[in-house]
Image 1 (cartoon, rainbow, N blue to C red):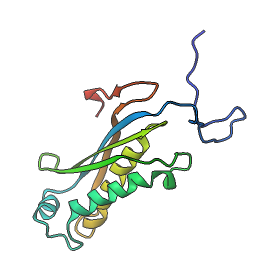
Image 2 (cartoon, one colour):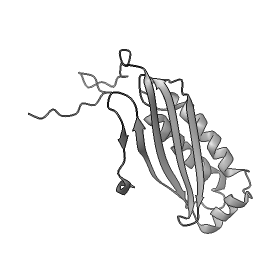
Image 3 (spheres, one colour):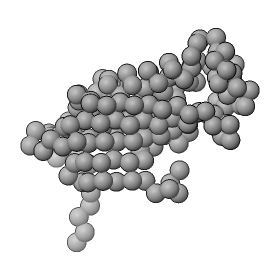
Image 4 (spheres, rainbow, N blue to C red):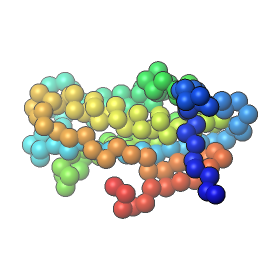
Length: 165
């Protein structure tokens, strides 16, 4: 008989629970996530020129993503509060998209991973880009938010397949 994977946030009675990580080994854990904001070429030009009414779109979105990574436990009910050691958010204009590609790398020395922190950083950075230029284009799309790599912990390294985008 093949063992089915168990959901770690569900207790024996089906109730939601926070996973007990107290006995896990402290290791360096890294997660990388990505996403993108697709927009019209004219909107991307506005962002790249720095002419948005609300200011520096990429700079503000970068800081918002970093702040979000640090506060993930306040947003996702069953996440542990973590002493993050690194939260880096890169926003890259891509005329071929056209739009902004967002990547977040989050690290911790801890007993649980930082996948949710990296995904939250990307999501909030994308939402911030949208917020800052929505007056110009409401039809922008936030797409492809996903985990692309994780390192550390009991389950070891994992990387998304290149074709998974």
